[in-house]
Image (cartoon, rainbow, N blue to C red; front, side, top):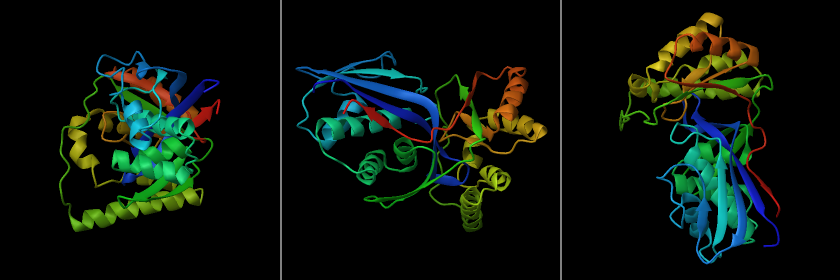
Length: 291
């Protein structure tokens, strides 16, 4: 390799209410990997904590070798703004970086669809992978072998306020194996109307649908008490579109930047145990420079 590869992968959020394991979105918060010189053994330099391996057991390297075990070891340097274990796709960013690196170093010429299929198989569900690779809002279904994805466009004036809990523990509540049939019908219809509203440019309807979920939030909200607080103060301002990101503990609220800064100021006065960050949407997905 004559020059360094630089792989950049955006943070993601999944579900967006009732779009369980199907809806995903990418944000302007990035996980960057610099692929440097060849080594005798894999070396991953990072400051992400003692629980993240620096060798071949790192998720990036494991992903690379699962795709092409013949790729020669390299030195990798990781820099990340994506919070670990906070429902913002931190493991997905490493996995997608591994896919991109394997594709480049192995000269595999994988299409985006093939990269998504690999990522969905490795992760077991598609929504974070598709948004990380494609950017923006994605709607996906995965049959265990092949992922079918539609990339949609979020309104350009919409950003997100992320409440990033200081504690990394996501919901402890196991989801049920079955749910009430009427609840399933309702939640499916909420997700359907959300997608249709996005496609037709009716944001107010879409935002309402984000808060109408019966698939998972009811079971997880006991472990994410800030959800009701943030939703209440958002409603007071006239903002709809608050949901648990992934399985928590991070909470996302969509709105215009002005609305979200106003909400952030209100929430700051209530001293929630976490950070509040207003983020823009990433429209382009993962990138590779230096190929």
